[in-house]
Image 1 (cartoon, rainbow, N blue to C red):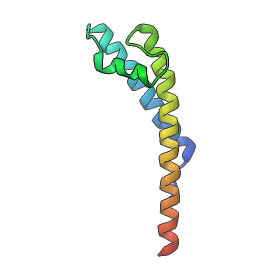
Image 2: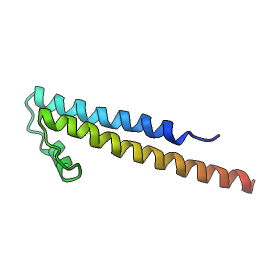
Image 3: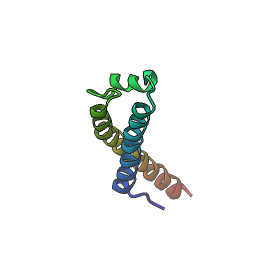
Image 4: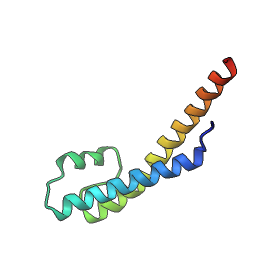
Length: 87
């Protein structure tokens, strides 16, 4: 079985981007300081636990999730093909 690289990349990007977006809104709405979540600002340029930062996190999260999902699918396809060929 082969994984579709674009499909897994898109799915991972959407899930990770919206997770950061919703988690940021959750922290803002319920008044949490967001010290742990704020550390993402060191990884995602321009991110902070603010209304604006939620959209920045959505974009960076999508890019990060897309790349991670695509690499995961690509590696899976590489290793699944090698094990199928050696059998």
